Image (cartoon, rainbow, N blue to C red):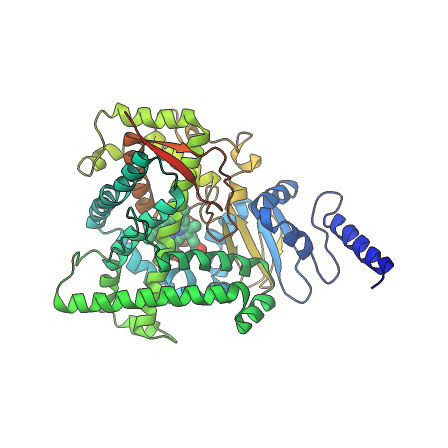
Length: 499
Ligand code: HEM
């Protein structure tokens, strides 16, 4: 190629890039390519890009995909659309085949199923998580992990002035507790030597790849999967690691149950599934065997219980470091109780932690761990905003953008204000779930909300009452591109014992 041709190619590229967006700032809809070039150009700042588009488009915008992909996406954060899709017309918006394809790793677990299989999981999970004794058990296990896992590490790093990644610690914390609650097995990943835990790392890799599957044409990632290269290679390896960890745990649990050696016989989800005599269950296990069904069930709970809570805790401490006045008010609320919160008095004190509750809700509004949701209609439909949808259109809710819309949360939407969640009479203010979507809405609302708040309050109270967390100023904190809103480079801090 001569200089002239190179010049023409470069000039065309520059012109092409310049026209990624039209004059109003909306993505250009190119022949053949649709709006994919604009989306790919902004993929590294996905959430902020969404905020800009949502603000300009009055909360709903149709992204047109390339003509050969069937990849149209209706992005909406209009609360009336959210309410309609997740609650009012729930029956028309199952998880559906596209979701199953992208989230294939979840198999027949609760997140990935519809109809009777989902109903079965929901009933089992509900009766387990809402069992009167479960709460007591959860409080006991969470305190145990704080005292024997978190505190020894905090003491160690504060004594030696070591920088530590809080996000990593919290992920270890929730991984150990969720494994205990679900399988009666504590992998002890939260210990001073910070051992490498392959299944926990595998979960991170899987979440990252699933995000990419959402934004690149499915032909492309399927081709990569077929070739076994790139991100799909990483995905396959991570999936294998997780499977073997869970299958081994199922085998171990079965043996313990046979021997009658269980540590907590009544309180782990796996035992309640293994004990379930319901004959209908066999009929539900379609294209699968018993162990695969159990493995899928557990894997779904790992994803539900590990990352959501740990990501919220990380963003919470990050936000406190930027808002010292909030930190002081939380400390004052804890000091005013006049006793150190511990396992025995937690239940009694919990109801007094109103400001802390508000600060956690505020964290979830600004940094919802499940930041994106996708739904596909079974039949053509018209949303309350007037937009037409059909089975070729994926509806995307971006909760990160939703928490940052002036039209939804007011002019101070970007500020961290726990007061927003407290009524004039000092009680916790309720916001409808289709406005505060962090825990989802409608029949598929999160089943672990109470569990998450219990764990987060125990962790926060133990840290704030005993330590000072100092964020490393120069450390860069940005959301990662993943299906869970982690911090890309972690949350680096120094810990000091409080006087
Ligand atoms: C801050 C913490 C948490 C947040 C923000 C959160 C958020 C969510 C969201 C957005 C969904 C809907 C996902 C979807 O349908 O695609 C969901 C579902 C669910 N969550 Fe949570 N979650 C949290 C903690 C937990 C915990 C600790 C558990 C317990 C293990 C849990 C159990 C579940 C289950 C079982 C579902 C499935 C509900 C269904 O499909 O019927 N979650 N959660």
